[in-house]
Amino acid sequence: MSEERHHHHFHHHKDDEKASEAVVYSESTYTDDGMGTISQTSDVVSVDYEKEKKHHKNLEHLGELGTTAAGAFAMYEKHKSEKDPEHAHKHKIEEEIAAAVAVGSGGFAFHEHHEKKEAKEEEEEAHGKKHHHLF
Image (cartoon, rainbow, N blue to C red; front, side):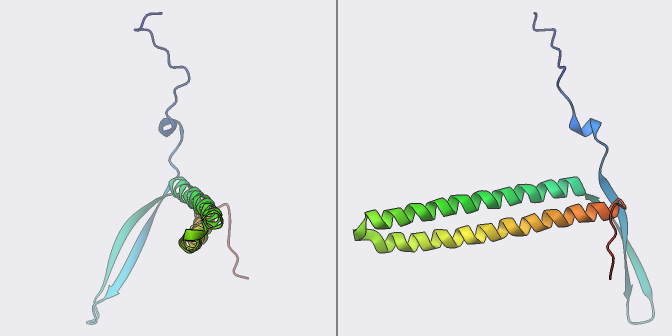
């Protein structure tokens, strides 16, 4: 087949096929200058919930990866402290630091998981799929 005849049967443009999931709303702010004059400013805000969910999902996975890497390094340092008694104190300190980093990274992943859930709930509320009851 000549190089001039290329058929791209499986090439799709996701942006062309998918309708925009962005929600646009107006945000108004009222200010009083203290002299009886009230002014209004309006900002148009556009929120792409799919992009926000994907962003938090990626950060959640990054946090999970950090937790795994720091945990593995802590276990490695624990092993080194047992095998190298001359430098055991140094390895113990590095093990504790790596364990603390693993805990912090796990907390970050947990935080991003909840941010992702919150973005999903906001999307459902914006599209009228879910209503929060106050009772």
